[in-house]
Length: 428
Figure 1 (tube, rainbow, N blue to C red):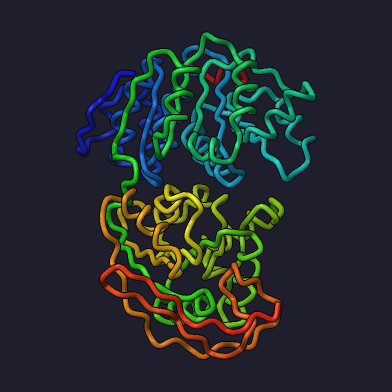
Figure 2 (cartoon, rainbow, N blue to C red):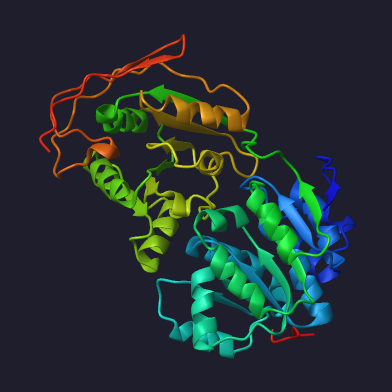
């Protein structure tokens, strides 16, 4: 795999080999200067070469593969295929591609789970130029023979590391068995584990590797903060932080059940809030995300399934109510703030017995994260539901100790209350 050194320099889109009609569209959309991944990937991809792009979230990867795909399909015909891990990301990529390809009459079809397969079959029958799909639903169509991929000329694996984390490797293998060997393949990922290298070796031809930031690099303008806190006091710290930070806030929990409970608790505090996780229907997830963008909901509570599908500018605060299962997801979570050159803040709750998890994150981001003294917390609220200890809620209404942290790196637990249980051608 060839390696391309990155120079983080600003330039215009006009020097990258992009067709005039696409340059006009980019200008109308107020895209002035390419991001580093766009600056490096677009000229290579326009030449039809295979690309492995490593870049953190929020760096413009969609246009890095979208512009070359749209331009090359108009030249060579055939169809493009974009495979990605989540419904939200599929919808986001579809919107971006249709905006850029509008002047060329680009037609797309989105194949995702959670909704009826029939409208998707109808969209396929209209012979779209680009298919945007999650692996599971695309395999459903292949199994039911409602789609053929024999005319795919360009395939993109977006957020490839996340797809592997979610167990999609067998589905991806079946998809590649259904597409021609003579194709251009682009793979984009935020991290570069050995599994990604193996995937590149298996499915690509002498790909050029582009890495704009080392694995674990966080967004440039995001500040980070840690609170060492007992699980019983987490909800009260959330209440305190929502009083302190008045802007839009994204909160991550480890489980969908925890997200549901936290959403209810935040609404009881008087804040508008919505939840987004795999138990929600596509319509509910879309309402939550659009409402968060529009200001209908001030707080969005999400699980990691949505951590890479939330592209919202202006998120002031990200809170890790639960630390992620994988250290790499920490980078993706906090990358939801400080997007598009703006600043942002990320706060993580670390329980006293999670010192190893914290140190794993610090090794990944290559720096020590600042640990702050707990503020005075509001009194515990009477709970309207039966909580689960693992989600940071107490069965007791007593105000518990919040635990503490010793600067010599020794943790100690706080006291715990008793537990009572295109057609092939675009329009010319």
